[in-house]
Image (cartoon, rainbow, N blue to C red; front, side, top):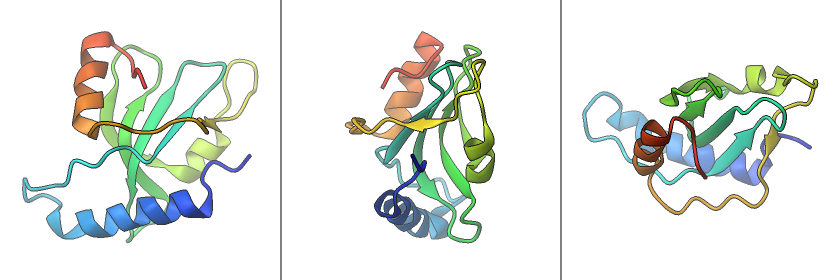
Amino acid sequence: MQLLTQDLRNKLLANGRQQLPLRGTGGEIDFVPVVKLFTPDAGATWLLTEIDPEDPDIAFGLCDLGLGCPELGSVSLTELASVRGRLGLPVERDRNFQGNKPLSTYAGDAQRLGRIQA
């Protein structure tokens, strides 16, 4: 399974284009996550909201490597595609994920819980 369908990639890029002029202004858009990626055998999860239109390999979202300290940040899509868990399984996309709140709410919940719950 490919990590991102063309439709998901288009949505992430559209969000990235909207965010680009707002970066660093304090007025950034708090998007609802578009996609949830996870490692089925390592406890890592990513909720992605946008792709940088200037560098389409870089996505932004809430990242949880399964170490108890989820954080907002950027991630390389190429690197995600190469990640393998303890049993050698690749990162997968949660096909049933439907974001229903802004990323900041997921981040606040994750900070309290020590993990992403989505």
